[in-house]
Length: 244
Ligand code: PEP
Image (cartoon, rainbow, N blue to C red; front, side):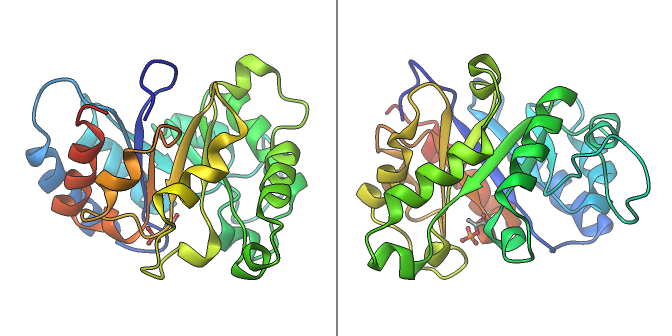
């Protein structure tokens, strides 16, 4: 981590897990675990229906609640979609954009760019995901691929706005597989920007977080599975708060 230039952020991505009742239960347990004092930024991105429960419990804490997706349009005939203004009004601070699971459902680089612009305009912190498949890594095109994804995602966005964004480098082959990138591989994708907070995502957990977060160009983590258990998520936060 490089606290001198960039913020440290530990963010959870719950994906399609937990009901609103389970969210309340988690948040109450997690709130009870967070010691007072100076901590890195903490975000929990939860399913849309769980946002109100999460915001209610976490009000007046340093934990920011986020969404897992948004629509780039301000309003209109987009059945089932949620705008960035709606997320802000519901109490969100963050939104994940371009997660590989959503890209696999058809989200394009252009969608990611439009959503990132809409999130920034609404005052949300976009957590923009990028990452290569195993096939791309084995074909040695990782660097070009990630550079292209980030270039598209941030096209037309002013530098001061880019600095407000967070990039999550998540090798697809490491997400939910228990197969973590080596600390060197995890850092590799993050050399793209010096001013923007860069997270690593992909099977980060309470056991390997310390080693991954020790890399100078990893400023935090985007955590799926391990963010569903308060004690595990807290351990990752504690690893981020050790002097790096
Ligand atoms: C993710 O979904 O962004 C993620 C990194 O998942 P996991 O930690 O479970 O690999």
